[in-house]
Amino acid sequence: MFLFDLALIKKYDQSGPRYTSYPTANNFSKFTQQQYEAQVALSNSRQGPISLYCHIPFCDTVCFYCGCNKVVTKDKTKAQTYLQALFKEIDMQSMLFDKTRQVEQMHFGGGTPTFLSNEQIIKLSEKLQSAFWFADDGEYSIEIDPRGVDGNTIKALIKARFNRISLGIQDFNTDVQKAINRIQSFEQTQSVIRIARENGFESVSIDLIYGLPKQSVETFKTTLNQVAELRPDRISIFNYAHLPELFKPQRRINIAELPSADEKLAIFKYSIDFLLAQGYVYIGMDHFALPQDPLAIAQEEGHLYRNFQGYSTHADCDIVGLGLSSIAQVGESFSQNEKDLDSYYQKINIGKLPVVKGKIISKDDKIRHAVIMDLICHFQFDFDKIEQNFSINFRDYFKDTFASLTAMHNDGLIELDNHSIQVMEKGKFLIRNICMVFDAYLATSKTQFSKTI
Ligand code: SF4
Image 1 (cartoon, rainbow, N blue to C red):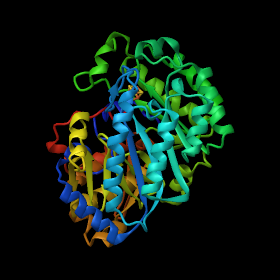
Image 2 (tube, protein in one colour; image 1 turned 60 degrees about the vertical axis):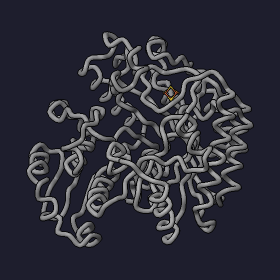
Image 3 (cartoon, helix red, strand yellow; image 1 turned 180 degrees about the horizontal axis):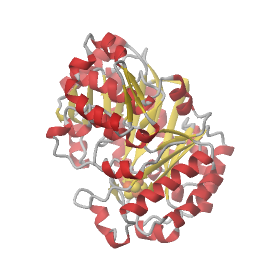
Image 4 (cartoon, protein in one colour; image 1 turned 30 degrees about the vertical axis):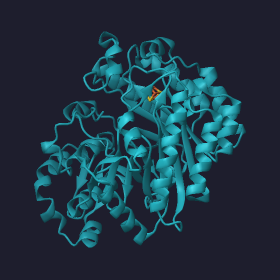
């Protein structure tokens, strides 16, 4: 069992990145189409599989806790205009990648991908399948909003080749739902999951959030019992970060209704104990999975990976980002598309890729990325591995980190010896803090991150 040490969690109460990449996206700077194309050429020379990420930015209502890049509208005609641009981007992107490279993963995220009509989802998937070569046994996932989904949508998603769905729940309590402007009944959610499973969906992931207005341990216990009834394959339980100066919708949250810091931690602790008792495996950060889920198996076998979509079993894929604000990981670079819809359309309309920001990964970035990946995915790190892969002496290279690592060792977060770092049970919930020791950009970063717990 994990040791949830309240005193330590308070001591390490900090804000920090979620490390879906290293360097993190706040370190991206101007990036040109030429730079992107050079990275695609590099990745083609190495071949390897592809993961497609497609961003659908629209939502028809706004959730007050939202920190995503989205466009809130009830005007469904906007989807058609967007798809026209997206299809052009798919054409431009697919011309760059060798046809011998197979797509092993596809993910539609948002926003709300099911803002698109069933026909539009099928057309978009078919467009991608005609532009790229899809593996028969790929992992094809989509985020859905159960409030707008019925049996016909599920059938359309199957036709569009999706085999995994992920859906937001956040909390089933009606008072909490009113406070966050997201009314979604248990029955509606249960029905969508049942129909998805009956139609052959292999995996169901759900998201919960702790720290929302009107939440308490008592109210969240009921939500967790209902979640246990649904028995999703994967569960993420995110910490609500109240940053109204960054995310406008959050200004509509009444801060007087937010749980206290102690209550919030108590909710998180109860949730962990509950999910472990229900047989879920703690994957890391805020993620849990059933033991037979590929994520749990990948962690057990040592090949779990983390990227912009969270934990992943496909470590060797180049990620092609399509659509507004999407992030790509190609060759030795990260890059991001325009975040503003008009700017995105302008670039596409003049036949340019909408890439705007990014970063070429340096050797130092690669070394630190390798350390952070091992820690965040496997809770351990062997110095030998990095010394062999990068021809460095770990202790010399990271001499500046040893004071912090020794303090963490003395606090029982890690076991530090001459050959390795092992994250102890007490340190697993503070994994972001441990990774932050290896982040060379934090000292000069002006970005506001969420709390690590
Ligand atoms: S949380 Fe999701 S569904 Fe809600 S407004 Fe944000 S992107 Fe849309």
